Length: 100
Image 1 (tube, helix red, strand yellow):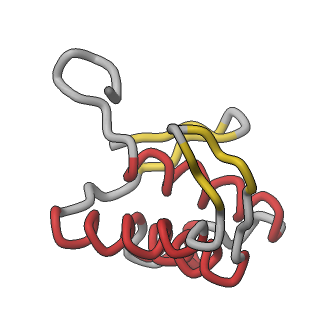
Image 2: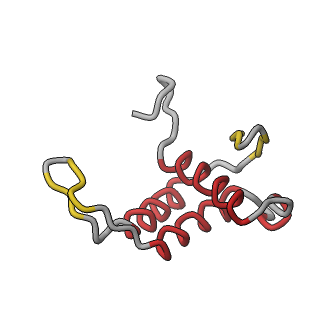
């Protein structure tokens, strides 16, 4: 699969079911302290250590050699790529062309 970030294309590996479940778990833990009622977020709290752990896991899945694939990027650019990869893995496009 291919993603585009800042006009650059990256070929990333597909995620399997077990990896997807683990990524979902890590990502959910980042928001565990948030307060949600009636489907609305009342108080958003993000544990950035857990968020980054989820994002790094997504990057590790995506590339055989993450350091090599992202070596020319700044840390902020790596974070942007990582967030897009994580969102792509967490919200896959279905056969009908959208993620819902």
